[in-house]
Length: 24
Image 1 (cartoon, rainbow, N blue to C red):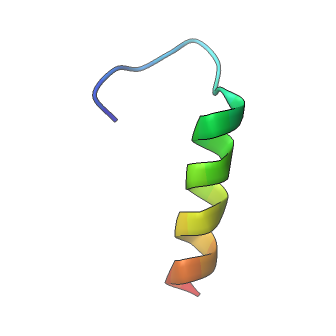
Image 2 (image 1 turned 30 degrees about the horizontal axis):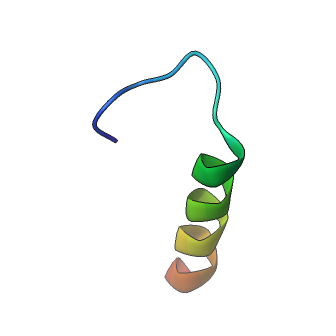
Image 3 (image 1 turned 90 degrees about the vertical axis):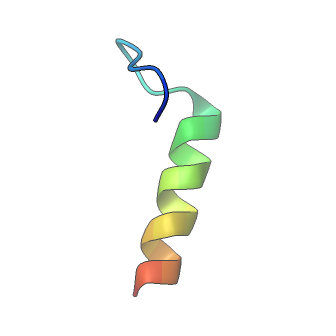
């Protein structure tokens, strides 16, 4: 991530979940 936010945004969660699924 380019910037670290205090809390993850919905978009960040979507990207994180997709990355996790692809990693499986």
